[in-house]
Image 1 (cartoon, helix red, strand yellow):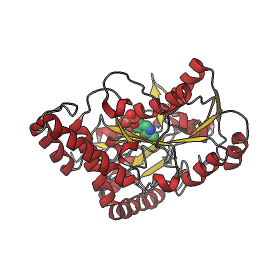
Image 2: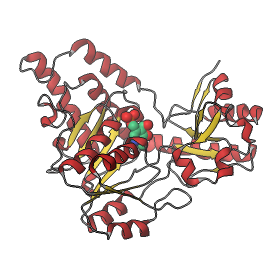
Image 3: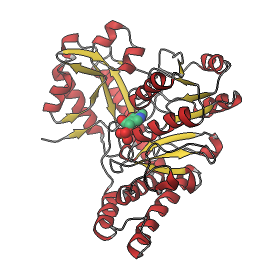
Image 4: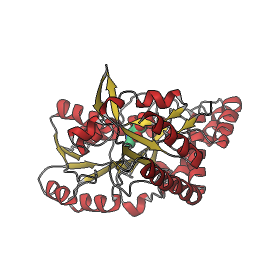
Length: 375
Ligand code: PLP
């Protein structure tokens, strides 16, 4: 059976060059980068080259890149330290952030008694800038945390405008850029952003590696205590092979960005056209002009198909993701779709189809024939 992977917002296949780089390091460069002997020095060179390479892609300086184990860790660290160490009293965020942000903010509310304001959303999931300005005009040291590209709907935030607005009111700005780093140009100097985070496995790198961009002199303090790694900001021996793999993956993503973005955008356009022909009542969840690799659709199927749809597709070798989580037989829409859809829509099956340069038009055609046999 031909297997089809259309779940690239969830994770991506490693590029062969990344696997090659990582296996070479695992076999040949096992030194601890904190050791002063030649084995350690050689690992340190790999680590610092990776840092420089990543910084260059984002127009940051190397010392502003802190390696973490994943995007979740980077989000947790920044939000927690902003409250604990930078005296942030209030966080402005949205109800459709990833749980790595939402659950962290909820815990900070309980632990530190901070105020949390959830920004108003438009029906397509875009934030309401008028509401942001209104919230920012209120008193108190504030951090704004808004994701760049929504992982479920692909809705894109105008990051430049949002950062400028926050800074006009002296608020700090953190963005969960896990879905956009490696897939669109990001220039931290131009944006003037305070914090952003990335995860290697979303841009054809390994799992278990991520990083935070932390603007110089931010005052952030560590989440983990121990050794002096990462200038004391993130203790623990660095996973050199993962980090070097991440740097390689990011370098290749940006090297091939124009070409791959054009190819993937074309695939998404084709998927919308073909789905509309097959299911004229189909609706796009989120904004029509969402990010080029994510398409979330509400299918005009009966509610009783909702629970089974992923299972049926999986039986045919097709991996996509559902916008709803099935819990013991009943189907609960995702927290993101629950914010954007009405009750009747939310009960129907929604699918998140997310593409990479490894997909083909044939993958889309096979997905649609499989859907036709279900609907
Ligand atoms: N933020 C967003 C927007 C994501 O899509 C994900 C991954 O699902 C994460 C954070 C978490 O990243 P990681 O898997 O590296 O912890």
